[in-house]
Image (cartoon, rainbow, N blue to C red; front, side, top):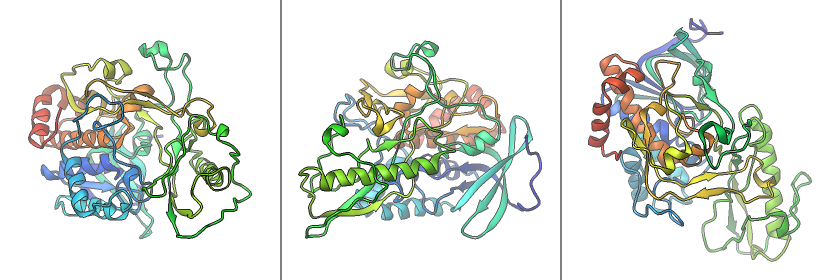
Length: 440
């Protein structure tokens, strides 16, 4: 049922040109881009810190086109706002690999210093309020830290929340799962379509306490008695190097990664403690003096909803480097697909296809094809499951975010919805991105 009225328990907090939902790197870059150009922007984020998977809550490294170890684009990297943020972090937080809390503060500072940008942390966007079936008028929000409920009215909305709760509530059409090989003629696709997605991961760190530390696994820990129980999953750890977890410590893609996320988190904890038991007690791994130091409180997701735009980016678009006239962003990470079963798959923990060049991402993938004033940024854009294997990494999401934030400002400037902007002013959007240090 479409909600057309704001509940009386959600008083109006303000009117904005652009409302951004989700404060990961895509949302940060989108909101900064729009505000720098003069739009009045609200950024709504449901966690106490910005950064999404790159925050201290999850501690995933920022990856993108500068991939090493098999990638052929050896000197590529992301430009624009994400480059500014990374350079700032390197300057003020040189030990960024283990000091994610400092990086949290840098993200917060860069958002707060924008005069046209209002930040709402610990704020869960609840519902979309519609003017009609195709236009969002505003959103309702609950801020858990203050027990406040309020509404935000906007002209253009950007869902960069990953799962796309507001986009889904607004009725934006989306896909979940893997396409059949026959639908887009993708060589890496499944023979038959299904509802499975890439598995989620939970990270952890360890520390050397200078003396032997025994570990007794809890009764609920999973058991991995031998290396044969971890096929294709290398797990050697150097005590002298920073360690942030195993990317293959994954699970959940065979379940509903949104509705079952609590159970997925619980199972990942059981797996993690089983892995640590294996490292401490099953063989000689050289970790006698090491103990668990930190565990991420929530899973780092790779995939959930993917919202449908006027174009769906495919494996063939990426591998053939299709030259889109409306390209506004780019990627370069390999097509990196993780099995839905995660650690319970007996196959290798990922398929990784290196790319021979960067590829363009068209603007038509970044707005909803049926909700007129809705843009997407991040892992929820209009791509196939296979193409998402490349576009989902955070530096790529960040350049997408800057593109849609810039587009949102131009939509407000000209009184257009994104589809109309793409038809009438795509050259201006591209030129503005180039002026702002973006490569397209």
